[in-house]
Length: 316
Image: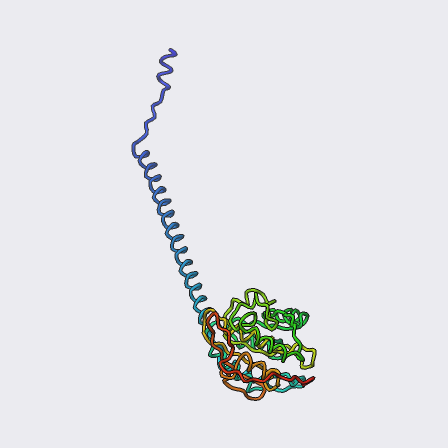
């Protein structure tokens, strides 16, 4: 009886083949969907990276082009800067440059191969102007007053300024030039690296990098002072002359401007080391020279030297 009851209660369950195929079909569709989604994601990722790389490359290329060929200041901006820099005001002094002098120096900067390297001896009323006119170039200022240079940089972070210690005296200008003549084949030669120079007229305590630059325009508008114990500008003029003649690359010519060229000591110092044959124009208080680099082993600043040694006045 137990066996019969067991047999009667047994149930047979059969799975239809369609149900198995339906589960397999769903899995295949799911697999296909995931594969498609993964492929689309990978293609999108690759495309995005390529687009980003191309955009970055284009940006870098454009930046490089602008660096090597910087856009000059528009003429209206240039004229406005020159106008307001030369317009007299309540605080104007005799140290300010005239409009004619500003335009002369500005013209040289406009003709300068880009990017232009401008070296200025002296922080002055025109300092911000020179930095603005040398748009996207490098402008470096040298001043004899350590505290003023630091203060000026703090107030104007875009300005690059360094202080230098002058060891000369205005009253000794004649003796300094005579000594430089005697040492023109040794310590005071026209082509050298001033960083290692023992010539008293050469400034050798500037940052090392400045001696490696090829300066396109140099303006001597400092140090300040025209009394007997003031340093005078003979050292700055000598340094400018050597830097211009010792260029290693870039443009072979360097424009050198000397402000207060009308004073005897500055005129004589300029004619001694920048030379009359290189004088382009001298009008009012500005002397404009154009110097060409010399070969290593050159020992003569000027082809013809007829300058008499100066007798500096006690004041000016």
